[in-house]
Length: 577
Image (tube, helix red, strand yellow):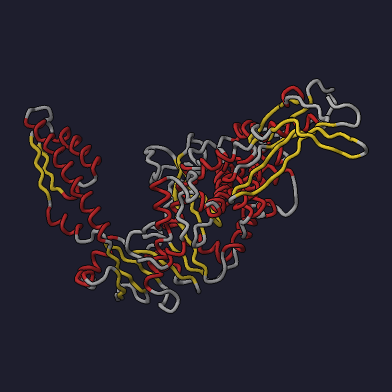
């Protein structure tokens, strides 16, 4: 121990030799002799780890060192990073002012419900419990909230739907915009809601009541509006209502509506033609293509190219783009042949059952044959003869050949002139409907899980679906911002110039990510869900001194983000609208 006027301390020196940096830590004894300060090296600490050297340095400076666990305790820990990510995206999107220009309790609850739907979709009751397991409730100021409060906020939100959608349309649509529209359904658990009807079930839940809803998006698939219909509403009957919504509610007089062949049929086209400045892009149905093939569509033209434009007097004032995808043709032919062969094998089993007397009457045989026909859906290619005690079938080769002639062929139709949109871009525009299909997948299954629907009141069902659309609006922007970290293809400009008919090809970088599951820096590629999970490891800890008085305030410490987490948060800060 040094006497008065003497001290022991650590001195660190650095020098660079042959491109390498060397650090030396020396334990020195300083003292005065004849009025001069002298130093004596009493030990070399360079072999010790840097943290140990720092501990020795601080101890010699008089600091009292003790294990953190003996001084502080953690009272609670809440996952924070994934909440921070979603709320950052909502802040960059101006989401709260989008819902309501003035702060209020209902607005806070809607913001929290939308964020919760993105983080982990639950029922409304479960939501009020789940958001207390993260920092969401505290960050949104909704700690004291019950299930009834959420239902009241949903009712308030539904009253504001028109205003919110007008704001979204002003952000993302303008005159001459390309607007995508499609309709889907989700099934119900329950029978009391007036919207719940039997209809064409897209969820594979035959016999379940359902509700239909149509989604309007911009050309990128960014959602703008959602409309809810009874479950037995036909797709095409909803189109004109969407046109009037765009014109009358959004105040946009001139748009190009893109819908599939079942959505924008001839009846809807005739109605749209009575309106000024509304154009459309859709496709011909199979029967119309067959008639066109018989008189105007020359198959030999496909030997030279896979896309060409033509006109036909049956479609006056329209442009038709005939497309043929050889890979799609091959796939359809293979599928049809496999189904025909499987059906024939099952029919042969029925014949053997009839021959052995296991099936006797025509009704009994017909019931068994009908089960086979419904299973494979290719009975139209067979001629069936059912009698008491006999069953025969014959493949209608001419029908198979007629259908095969259309394999891989589709025809786009539009009211747009070539000066507005050239042939290739018209086909590309129709294929943008895949962006709406992506939205439906996310809404229904992958992330937001709009189904099954448990609400009984019509207003609650409408509010639930609108809430899910708003959640997808936020998630859509997060997905776009995170493209470089996800399996997504970053080269979006290539889609604007690629062959409009050939199957879409991913960029080399996207293929590399899919094959190796790693990014260029060697770190893992994420899905949207797994990236949120990684961010959730950023935790907010509530701490205090051990054995402190009850009135002593606590303090919080958050996990330091790693490089991947920080990059994800930085990318969200770049979101613009």
